[in-house]
Length: 139
Image (cartoon, rainbow, N blue to C red; front, side):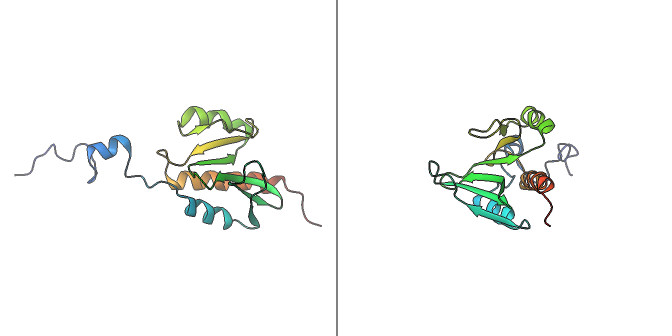
Protein backbone atom coordinates (compact mmCIF):
# COMPACT_ATOMS: atom_id res chain seq x y z
CA UNK A 1 0.00 0.00 0.00
CA UNK A 2 1.33 3.45 -0.94
CA UNK A 3 2.18 5.92 1.79
CA UNK A 4 -0.35 8.81 1.48
CA UNK A 5 2.07 11.33 3.03
CA UNK A 6 4.89 10.55 0.61
CA UNK A 7 4.17 13.25 -2.00
CA UNK A 8 2.91 15.94 0.35
CA UNK A 9 6.13 17.94 0.16
CA UNK A 10 6.01 17.84 -3.67
CA UNK A 11 9.75 17.39 -4.07
CA UNK A 12 9.25 15.98 -7.57
CA UNK A 13 12.20 13.63 -7.29
CA UNK A 14 14.66 16.07 -5.73
CA UNK A 15 16.13 15.28 -2.35
CA UNK A 16 15.22 17.46 0.62
CA UNK A 17 18.86 18.53 0.84
CA UNK A 18 18.93 19.60 -2.83
CA UNK A 19 15.74 21.55 -2.34
CA UNK A 20 17.10 23.21 0.78
CA UNK A 21 20.19 24.56 -0.99
CA UNK A 22 18.72 24.61 -4.52
CA UNK A 23 21.75 22.72 -5.84
CA UNK A 24 19.61 21.39 -8.68
CA UNK A 25 19.50 24.87 -10.27
CA UNK A 26 21.98 25.03 -13.13
CA UNK A 27 24.39 27.92 -12.68
CA UNK A 28 25.28 30.49 -15.33
CA UNK A 29 28.72 29.66 -16.72
CA UNK A 30 31.05 31.90 -18.70
CA UNK A 31 30.31 30.38 -22.12
CA UNK A 32 26.55 30.74 -21.64
CA UNK A 33 26.98 34.35 -20.46
CA UNK A 34 29.30 35.30 -23.33
CA UNK A 35 27.22 33.60 -26.02
CA UNK A 36 24.01 35.21 -24.75
CA UNK A 37 25.53 38.70 -24.64
CA UNK A 38 27.07 38.41 -28.10
CA UNK A 39 23.73 37.24 -29.55
CA UNK A 40 22.31 40.71 -28.89
CA UNK A 41 21.95 42.85 -32.02
CA UNK A 42 25.09 44.95 -32.49
CA UNK A 43 26.85 43.58 -29.39
CA UNK A 44 30.64 43.62 -29.32
CA UNK A 45 33.15 42.46 -26.75
CA UNK A 46 36.41 44.05 -25.69
CA UNK A 47 38.98 44.28 -22.91
CA UNK A 48 39.13 48.09 -22.51
CA UNK A 49 40.70 48.38 -19.04
CA UNK A 50 44.52 48.18 -18.91
CA UNK A 51 44.44 47.96 -15.10
CA UNK A 52 41.87 45.14 -15.28
CA UNK A 53 43.08 43.14 -18.31
CA UNK A 54 40.72 40.21 -17.61
CA UNK A 55 37.57 42.36 -17.49
CA UNK A 56 35.49 41.48 -20.54
CA UNK A 57 33.04 44.22 -21.49
CA UNK A 58 30.02 43.89 -23.77
CA UNK A 59 28.90 47.02 -25.59
CA UNK A 60 26.35 48.06 -28.13
CA UNK A 61 27.39 51.03 -30.30
CA UNK A 62 30.13 51.89 -27.81
CA UNK A 63 27.97 51.78 -24.65
CA UNK A 64 28.49 49.09 -22.03
CA UNK A 65 25.61 46.83 -20.99
CA UNK A 66 27.47 43.98 -19.24
CA UNK A 67 30.88 42.94 -18.00
CA UNK A 68 32.58 40.09 -16.17
CA UNK A 69 36.05 38.93 -15.14
CA UNK A 70 37.12 36.09 -17.45
CA UNK A 71 39.88 34.82 -15.17
CA UNK A 72 37.53 34.23 -12.24
CA UNK A 73 34.02 34.12 -13.67
CA UNK A 74 31.26 34.37 -11.15
CA UNK A 75 30.43 38.04 -10.84
CA UNK A 76 28.47 39.74 -13.63
CA UNK A 77 27.85 43.48 -13.71
CA UNK A 78 24.67 44.73 -15.38
CA UNK A 79 22.91 48.04 -15.83
CA UNK A 80 19.47 48.58 -14.27
CA UNK A 81 16.91 51.35 -14.09
CA UNK A 82 17.78 53.51 -11.06
CA UNK A 83 14.45 52.68 -9.37
CA UNK A 84 15.24 48.93 -9.60
CA UNK A 85 18.79 48.96 -8.30
CA UNK A 86 18.18 48.97 -4.54
CA UNK A 87 15.05 46.84 -4.61
CA UNK A 88 16.95 44.04 -6.39
CA UNK A 89 19.71 44.27 -3.79
CA UNK A 90 17.06 43.94 -1.09
CA UNK A 91 15.30 41.00 -2.76
CA UNK A 92 18.27 38.86 -3.83
CA UNK A 93 21.34 38.04 -1.75
CA UNK A 94 23.16 37.44 -5.06
CA UNK A 95 22.74 41.10 -6.06
CA UNK A 96 25.00 43.76 -4.54
CA UNK A 97 26.74 47.07 -5.18
CA UNK A 98 29.37 46.88 -7.90
CA UNK A 99 32.95 47.89 -7.49
CA UNK A 100 34.19 50.58 -9.91
CA UNK A 101 30.78 51.34 -11.49
CA UNK A 102 27.95 53.73 -10.67
CA UNK A 103 26.01 52.32 -7.74
CA UNK A 104 22.98 54.26 -8.97
CA UNK A 105 22.77 52.40 -12.31
CA UNK A 106 24.67 49.14 -11.91
CA UNK A 107 24.46 45.96 -9.84
CA UNK A 108 26.78 43.03 -9.59
CA UNK A 109 25.25 39.58 -9.77
CA UNK A 110 26.76 36.47 -8.20
CA UNK A 111 26.31 33.96 -11.02
CA UNK A 112 27.44 31.17 -8.70
CA UNK A 113 24.54 31.88 -6.36
CA UNK A 114 21.05 30.39 -6.47
CA UNK A 115 19.70 32.39 -9.40
CA UNK A 116 18.19 30.63 -12.37
CA UNK A 117 19.87 31.16 -15.72
CA UNK A 118 16.55 32.47 -17.04
CA UNK A 119 16.58 35.22 -14.38
CA UNK A 120 20.11 36.31 -15.28
CA UNK A 121 19.25 36.26 -18.99
CA UNK A 122 16.19 38.44 -18.31
CA UNK A 123 18.43 40.93 -16.50
CA UNK A 124 20.90 40.90 -19.42
CA UNK A 125 17.96 41.64 -21.73
CA UNK A 126 16.89 44.52 -19.49
CA UNK A 127 20.43 45.92 -19.32
CA UNK A 128 20.84 45.75 -23.09
CA UNK A 129 17.40 47.32 -23.56
CA UNK A 130 18.21 50.24 -21.25
CA UNK A 131 21.37 51.00 -23.18
CA UNK A 132 19.77 50.68 -26.63
CA UNK A 133 16.84 52.87 -25.58
CA UNK A 134 19.25 55.72 -24.74
CA UNK A 135 21.27 55.48 -27.97
CA UNK A 136 20.86 58.33 -30.44
CA UNK A 137 18.97 57.36 -33.58
CA UNK A 138 21.09 56.89 -36.69
CA UNK A 139 20.73 59.48 -39.42
